[in-house]
Image 1 (cartoon, helix red, strand yellow):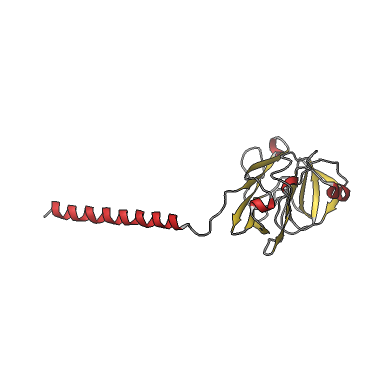
Image 2 (spheres, rainbow, N blue to C red; image 1 turned 120 degrees about the horizontal axis):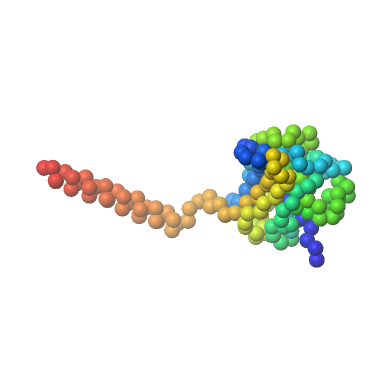
Length: 216
């Protein structure tokens, strides 16, 4: 069965040097029992074509569609993106506040809902940006929190890259899933840290003592 893909992304950052005028990256990490998405970068639209329709929706993670995003909905739709069709098994999680007001969404492959709204073809890759977005403009920091862990949502850890354009109009989007963030060190980690600090202190005292004896 053909897998349809939707890759969603939102971000902030600086323009790349070289032939690519912009770049966009967003990172997914487990924090507690949730998945937190943080994006950085900007987007170069010069090599893309504006589609016929627009798309309004709340951002979501849909691994089987290669979809993840941050920011509020309300997008202009651009055609011409290539990349992975999915980054996990079937699943869906919607974001909840706080989330940033602006974001971006990339679709590795359209589904029926997107096709009907935008007049695009089955399996076509699309880039969705906020209404009126100016090419290569920095988004500012974008983030969102989603209910569920990677396993619960169906995400597979890894790096997924989407590209478009060439030469001066080349651009890319990178989706980094993982590693798992640990808010509080494990007890064994604390024990190792304490032992390490103790050894450092003992070594320092030993050196001071022998230095004093040597110059007596």
